[in-house]
Image 1 (cartoon, helix red, strand yellow):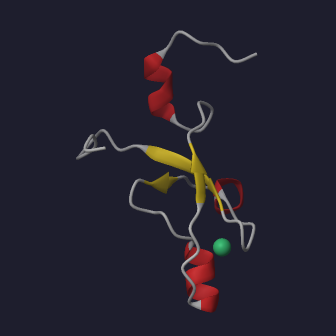
Image 2 (cartoon, rainbow, N blue to C red; image 1 turned 135 degrees about the vertical axis):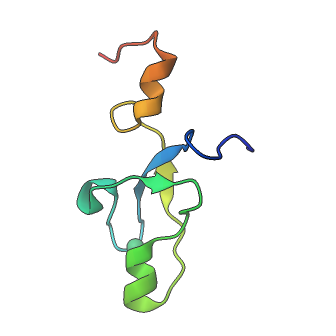
Length: 71
Ligand SMILES: [Zn+2]
């Protein structure tokens, strides 16, 4: 887990189990260090851990791996 510094930044799709906001609502992906929901933090001062995952459609880096085409 010591991969990214500089250009090769990994990004994540995310969804907050508490407030329901995610990358689709906020229109951006989460960086590696973004593990808590900023909405819950700003609204309620709570640290809520995001549910995160990678998705080929949203993660440009994934295309570089090539090979698989989702049906
Ligand atoms: Zn939240």
